[in-house]
Amino acid sequence: MMIPDTMKIAEQTNALPIDAQIFRAAMKKVATPVTIIATGNGDVRHGMTASAVCSLSDQPPMILACVNRNSAILPHLRANGCFSANFLDECQVELAQCFAGMTKMYGSDRFNLGTWTTLATGAPILGDALSTFDCRLECEYDSPTHAVLVGRVEAIANEGSTRALIYAGGRFGLPAPI
Picture 1 (cartoon, rainbow, N blue to C red):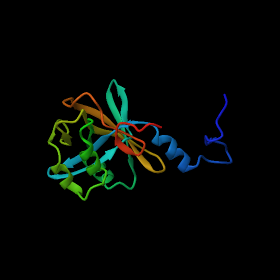
Picture 2: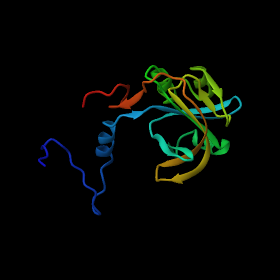
Picture 3: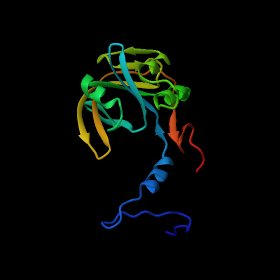
Picture 4: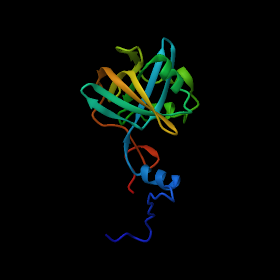
């Protein structure tokens, strides 16, 4: 296979680790669904936009979500023992930006956007999300920078449209041509 001179090639060897910038540039090309991870206890709610959320198994139904160790939501996820994974539809860019910290809205005020309710675990769920998974925190795995959370799905809401909001090329929406 002929590789163009303009293509950067990164190889994993014992001597040279993969450069972080090359890794981020390559991952930016991959479209991922946009999700709001949320947890709460009564009126005290916390949420964040995440793109590292996926199914783990269907028997039992489980998902995994990766949360940065420095994220303000992580201690609350652990303390509450539950969370929701709200996969956004293509019209929910404003929500994604808000929960990603791109607006001047913080903390529980973020939940003033959208219609939020609860299901089985008491975690806040977005009423008009593409799909929502209400989860109990089953276990957690450590990585150098992130906590990998495994959630056992207790309830599902599937009310949204049929087109997912995605993140690619450093922005929300449809992927930019690469």
